[in-house]
Length: 137
Image (cartoon, rainbow, N blue to C red; front, top):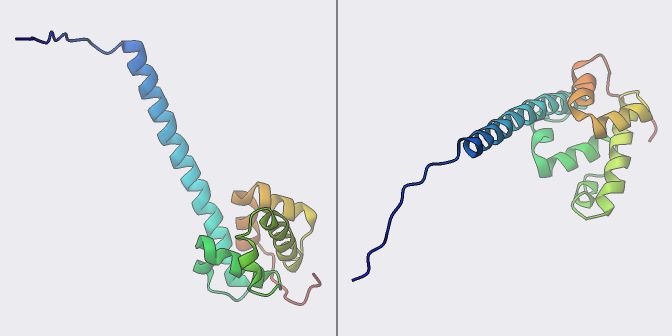
């Protein structure tokens, strides 16, 4: 007969503290990112509403590309180009730049919409900027 020896080993307090700290940091990061994402969605929603589209569509990831294309004055099928790797990088820059132009802004706002969306989407959506579909692309 073979007997298995069992031992009780405790968890190292330093390791437990490190795991707890990492878990807390993960939760804090998730909460902060969620808040920033919601702020961005509010801006996108209000910008789409200013452009005459149903705002909720601008918050749905795949549909968002089609709404952005329409807001930029491009055909809706440009939204499909956002699903093509490498091509999507060029297309999103063109679309976002045209959106900022139609809101009466320039390259600085385009860069802000791409790199600081949680500031610039709400700034255009909730601010005094007005959508003008007649501005040149």
